Amino acid sequence: MTDTHADTQLLCQRLQAIWHEQIPLSSAMQMQIADFDGEVLTTCASLAPNVNVHGTAFAGSLYAIQALTGWGMMHLQLKLNVLDASIVIASGQINYAQPVAEDIFVRCSFGQQHDEMTKLKTSGKGRFPLVCEVLLADGSRAGEFSGVYAVRLNR
Amino acid sequence: MTDTHADTQLLCQRLQAIWHEQIPLSSAMQMQIADFDGEVLTTCASLAPNVNVHGTAFAGSLYAIQALTGWGMMHLQLKLNVLDASIVIASGQINYAQPVAEDIFVRCSFGQQHDEMTKLKTSGKGRFPLVCEVLLADGSRAGEFSGVYAVRLNR
Image (cartoon, rainbow over all chains, first blue to last red; front, side, top):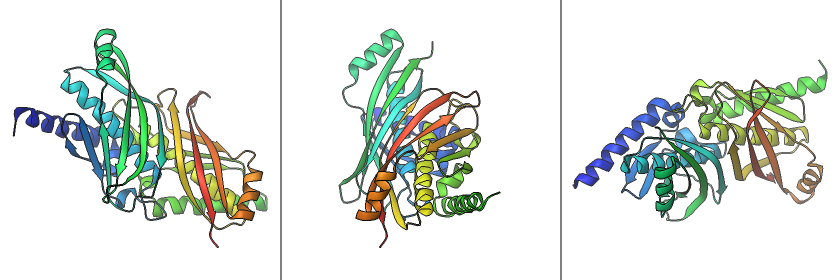
């Protein structure tokens, strides 16, 4: 295990503690961090607390889990850049390609947002578009979320 | 109290029971029906179970409450039309105009969707766009949700 890996593991533990202590719905959804390699964040949640009348994942849960995964990704990237900032989601959109009849796995990639990170450091403000997707066990995608996160440095 | 009012009250009681018994997250969010007059549905939820790290309403809760309010509106309209159907949200989008630092109130109007209801009755399928908004105590709006609900008659 490298130091970098140990660092990201610790950041993830702290992020999950923030979620469960300060956002009660993340506990109700049993949302957890499955993996983070510095660029890709994977979260998961059991189906049972997130089920709907059809026995599949509730659309509201799928949105909330993806929106919070994006927020978590933003939080982690700011920590990796040693920046103290406030993160707020400004807008979101989601499509539901197919029902999710299994535990929920969400993947978010940070991608090429170096210009916006530079702008944030110089101006104190940035807007980061992030995309998440729900991955099924068979490898297909059950839909996609995109959100815009408004970030402001705490000075 | 008219018979029609009594009917809509009963439909709302049954809808809320469906939510709380079959969608655990609606219970976790303490979501309730505040009012329904046949055309406008108002739902509410306490802030405490839906709070975020800023002490305001979690973006995921605001989406989930509005998406479920739209689903509930569709359910109620189908009941009023004596139609047995399956309702699935196909897509949703939301903007967050300002933070919500109080209990959450959501309003959804059914509007002029008579043509789509006629199409549903004849073809067995329909797609209903619905809009919800979060209302603050001072009368302003904290943001808007729009969703497309795919409805299919159970035959």
